[in-house]
Image (cartoon, helix red, strand yellow):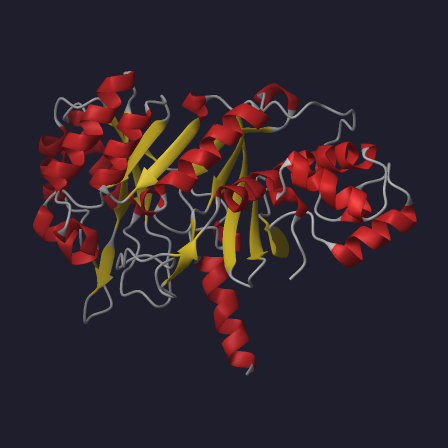
Length: 371
């Protein structure tokens, strides 16, 4: 496999350049393009054309390359299917919002959590991603933003939402971040240092890996924490999230409360609303009845939290259905009545299958069908 220059430190990059018989200043030029997320050497316009061809034959720029790119019809969401150097595939999503540009990144190739409603876990866990592989996903999105920017003046990569760069990061793509905690922490440190993205604009979402949450407490940075809850009782949660059998709700919420209290941050609660088709083809609510809303209200009473209600995004291989809009709003109304800060997450990129793992899964199925 070709070496990946993005993974080199400054000394290694300098040695690589001098071994090619090039002057040392070329290393600084290449480093600047790597920081910008140049997808290939052809983009490095201040290098001679012959040198770009030589570099392309010898090495790669980033540890990811774009296999597919899908744009939503409203132009707000772009989803990337990326290939790693060993052939594994991951996804990341760029979301253009009124508050800036947000990137949802993957932390693992695949997922071992086994959540019954999710596409990400269907192909199993392949491996953890390195900090560089996570960082490269942000740079892919950053490059796309700059490539499509109508104002072509160059800007420094400081993450300021007012200059059109990536301003927010959500580690909520494929994989469980707190099964890859040290690489995730390393990535967040780099995003803050190299891209200038503030701690409070970075969110880690977890199924509830209690030791991982406690490692974030020990680390001490005031990032945002999101808990994928999806049920108000251990019995119901255990049916759809096997991790609950190891880390029950009380333990997860206790650790999350400790984290949010440390930084006076609001805890994000993710709650996917699920239904199931009965024998008559009608949708019966699984975790989204008024009774479930009342139980969730009692579970979260007095907590500094905000509940994101997420209507389920259909996955063919999963035996669930999306609740009606009336059921979703009724659930929200009960939470609000009980004093729980709640919003219904706006669905983005539904026309391009932007839910976690869908593009990777569909690509794997298509490859299988061609055999």
